[in-house]
Image 1 (cartoon, helix red, strand yellow):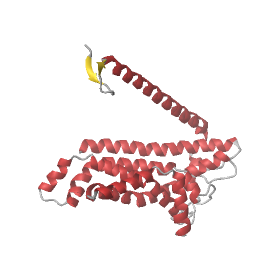
Image 2 (cartoon, rainbow, N blue to C red):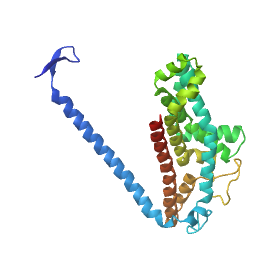
Image 3 (spheres, rainbow, N blue to C red):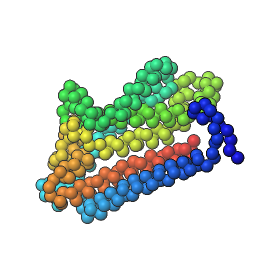
Image 4 (cartoon, rainbow, N blue to C red):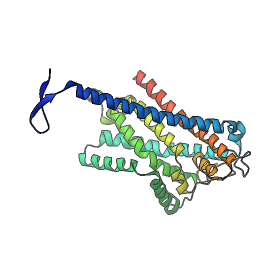
Length: 296
């Protein structure tokens, strides 16, 4: 039986129960089709890359230096450079990002200040990575005089992932029930004791997930490193933050730019290595999140 409802014009109208159901089903089918097409395209790209570069993916490839000859070229300096960038980015971005997220969510009580900080954080997260690279070039390479070294690259990448860590930390803290804070306050704990001993342990799964996903982005970024001045051809291993460096995405870009098809095979093998590292971070994030959710 049809029911009378209020229409947009303010006049009563008839509600037809089947109309909303049909629209929902159409939207569900379209969304499913788009999802399947995207996954098939991604899977096809990954499989094609794996088949194309699998023959070159050997231990010698991982432990050799770049060369003018594609059959002798290796990924070792780029791999070590990526690990250096990852470690330095952890040192610079993770403590600052988590501390900023805790401060903004738990200690800032001025509404206008909080809104202002939200505005800057969200807008920084939407800035294209190449502009972050230009900022790093001007600030770290030229003004501070560091030059195109590992330290400048890591600081630039830290600026890139800092908004993600801050936002993820705030969302994880916001998901903790308010009753936990109230129970701690009722027992005489200070705000810092409440946050440190009760709120953070309950939110650390979400915080760690955001950190790992941010670090996975560090591994795959190319544009900021190109702007800062990463080298595509290095025949030595960086041993300090003040050394020149390369990275896996930079090496892939260099090999793809070569005219010889044999270098494209090297690039495909390097893409497999890069995807494996990124998937490892994603799997770690999912595992830690699942395990700590069960514990808490």
